[in-house]
Image 1 (cartoon, rainbow, N blue to C red):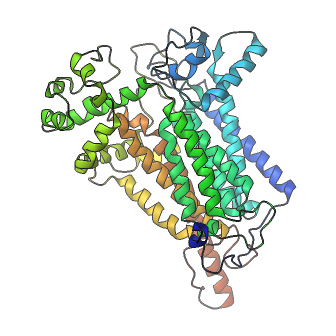
Image 2: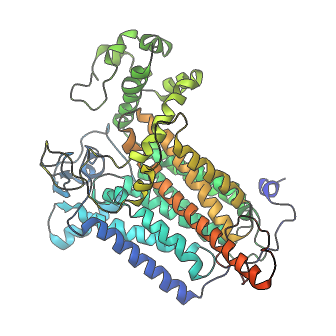
Image 3: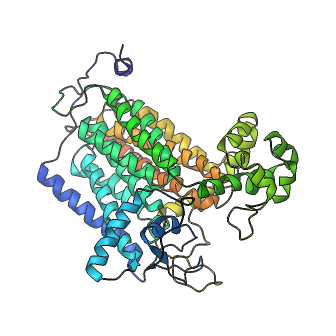
Length: 523
């Protein structure tokens, strides 16, 4: 029996009512407004009252040097710099870094050279491109959601507030690649909503492309693929065939999903395998020397268990990016196959799961601190205190309210609660409720996996590496807040209707409707 039949609810196609559709002209106008407003909000965050961005921490080389660009000589962690000059291309393959963000940068750089005739590049231009791409993602979400225009605006508006947080948009004006992950995740959200609502091949292909773009923006973001797969497999609406299948409808939704995600996984796997060893070896060095040995009660015994000489304990506390990192030490060179192998650490944590669990709370707590204070958003002088932009930061303001230091981090309760509601909502056949459930599951799984994967570099820059977990959590809070407001408003309407009718309000599940009052109206 086919897997798609096994997972389909009994009875095959359901007698669900199709989700309400807006007239084409209304949808076009609404999407255009969302695009314009989102782009304007992000550009205002970046350029009103002075240009802001994110200071280079040395990571920009993996993006721009392949284009023959180098950041200005005055660049430092204490001062943001957006001007890049023509320079030599990166030598060797050890620091090769493939990313889906580079083709967009390459195209933008080529256009600016044609227009200006200058071989230099102002990253602010790329920030404008990023703002438009975020706007397109928000517009796609508006088009994908079910219900009337009034049902779509609240969630879209809250999502725009989340993605335009200054802690995220500063990456648009930088030489990093994280911004590709932010934009890609918003596209993934729009695509997965459209897929659950319509269950058609165009939306599935759009989802596949968005997943590949997101996962290839930065190697660590590959967890978006299993997060998408799990969320859709738990969606009863996605697994069932449409009651009235159309020309592009998915006949075997599970098989189609597996095929598209398998293809995307192959592309992401090849991308990850093409990365140079330099950055990956730095991660492993930091995990061992900057974290595991520092946290160990007996570093020599841990090294011996890993098959490494106890003498390496003398490097405990060092990190891979110091000027005097002992890369050429004989003890490290002679044991390079063990030190720089993920197998070493996977086997160690498999036999000592308690050691890994001891690291997790610190990473989860670091999500609230992902807007790091050691990278400036404004120009400054080397040696000065980094200057952060004082602009709206609603996501990090809310995350800052979460207590830290608990044995079980407070943010884990947020993720757990969202997962519980997500599973319940995802079981619904009603489009509005189903898409919010799938979004909750996707964003919870992605946020948690990103925080766990941040530990692949140990405690080194742990807060900064949690920025994608923070971004996903910001979108998750937008979904939960909109669902709560909608449920409360529906309860008030039902009570008022019951009072008018002189009876008790009808009992109803804690639902998230597709955009109409629960007490009447066509969906």
